[in-house]
Image (cartoon, rainbow, N blue to C red):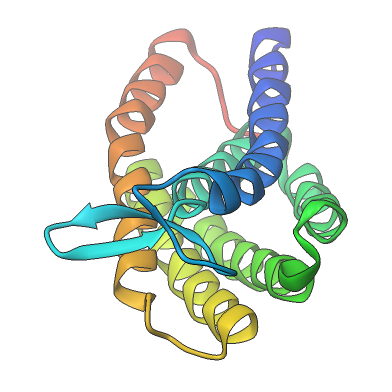
Amino acid sequence: MNTDSRREGFLCLAAFALCIPAANWLIGHVGTFCVPGGPCLIPVAPGVTAPSGVLMIGAALVLRDLVQRRLGTGWALGAVLAGTVLSALIAPAALVLASATAFLLSELPDMAVYTPLARRGLVRAVAISGLAGLAVDSVVFLWLAFGSLDYLAGQMIGKAWMVLLALPVIAWLKRRDARLGLTPA
């Protein structure tokens, strides 16, 4: 792996880490409507809303895959564990358990799905692992945070938007890597 590839991996790692405080800040401060004592909501589809933090969680799922691609499985696992601790430290008190648990339990299946699929197709691996991670994250977070799955559709749609929006960039990275002779970690 060359220096540019490692540098790119560390940039993805930093962006991954920033997704955690951003998601926690968004959920309490940004939305078209903020539920008293609850999350701030954004529209993610016609007639469907979700807590605004979903955008950053969807991005985190993709960035974790890129950390693994550039720096290796050990770095990705370390990032997930550090992200879990960070999530617990900065989440609002009422959301600490839900935030940290959902983060850990969603990033690990994302990794488990991504790892074998990445050898057969990067874009497919990112898409399918992102879907696995966002489903787990959505169910775990909503159930632990609110004791309800009322926002499940919105959670899944919001995170899926971020994964889908990243796929053209992932395809471009794959083509660029091939052109430059860069290999995954």
